[in-house]
Amino acid sequence: MNERDSEIMSQTLATHGYVESMDMETADLVILNTCSIRAKAEQKVMSLLGMLRKAKKRHRGMQICVAGCVAQQEGEKLLERMPHVDLIVGTQNIYRIGELLEYARKSPGYVAVDMEDDYAIPRFMPDALPSGLADDRKKIDTPIAFRKFVTIMQGCNNYCSYCVVPYTRGREVSRKVSDIVDEVKVLLDSGIREITLLGQNVNSYGKTNTVTETGLPCSFSDLLHHVAEIPGLARLRFTTSNPKDLSDELMKCFRDIPVLCPQFHLPVQAGSDAVLKRMNRKYSVEQYLQLVETLRSYCPDIALSTDIIVGFPGETDEDFQGTMDLLEKVRYHGSFSFKYSDRPGTRASDFEDKVPEEVKTRRLMQFQARQDEIGLERNREYLGQVKEILVEDVTSESVKGRSDTNHIVHVNEAISVLPGEFIRAEIYHAGQHSLNGKMVK
Image 1: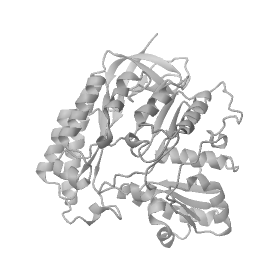
Image 2 (image 1 turned 30 degrees about the horizontal axis):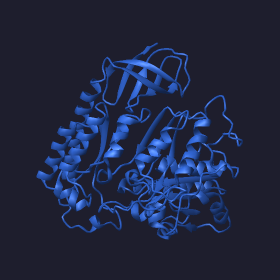
Image 3 (image 1 turned 120 degrees about the vertical axis):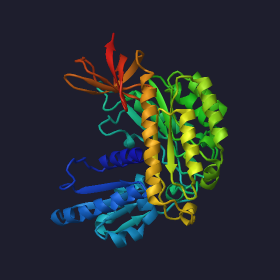
Image 4 (image 1 turned 90 degrees about the vertical axis):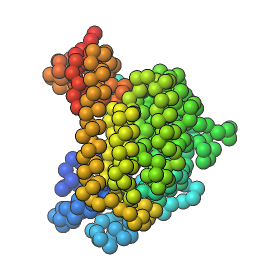
């Protein structure tokens, strides 16, 4: 989500005459697009802002902007800590980044974090096209990119007890189907091959507001079918999903839509019903496992990944063992696992039965070690298989690409191919986090 927000700001600023720079020390504008989902990410922002204070003294014309969730969460309090910041832009104001920078140039320390109840993602317009794309929308010979994110909704209504997203990104608002389809068409016309649909909880798309011109509701599975029918789309992905809203119709999409990649990120967070209840996740371990079973019945080759929080307040040794047991049952291809950290304003931050830091560290190491073993075992299942690879990077001696299951594949051969093209490779080696293959004509 933050990566897509960064793209939006970059595209918007390009229409205001800004050109991206790789040198932060000499740049006229530095934007930190922030995440506050965990304390460590927020700490990194503060550390970098401290470094930028010195850079700004050397480069008097520099503007410093903090955008994203930390900006939304901290607002004017951030200015008290970092008075050298020129502009603070909340999550729902990034589309106004150009005009807000003009305000901040006249009056440094400008804050734009207001959230409107009727807020809606602006309609996709030609001036928000990827940087370098012709205004007339004609197809260009060389793709400027081959994979893009398309935001289909903003916000979240779930209020998990540990999560700041509903407070930093607001309530759920879904975009109109026609706007999403129009944006995808333009991207495909520009040479994009793979589209990832984005939302905090894509499973609940269309539930909170009208998203079709006819006034008829549209579910996320309906949207997937609409997008999949657009000519030129080679691969379709989406993220992220909440298990409590995962419908049978959506799971069947992995069986029925050929361009939908057999890869699914389904965050579980914990393997204990007691912890899940305190997290306000609204599903049980048994229900989650049933979803996994159903998914694999529709798409046996689906690669599953998840999110895990260890050391949630009140988590006992028995609760953590439940998470380890869940890992053994599902055998994820990969996971993102973190130690719990208090986030301001969340219910969990007020829970008193915090788990000691050393216990959280030990549990995280135990989980990650076993996940690495299972991930390697799952990767070895691809040995001997021929996979279609979307090329990402080419050198004189090798090619790197990505399979439909989202695995990085290295082909150590000199091949005449460009990023964005497809090749076929037979997998002969499986590593911890990637695969190796040889070209198959």
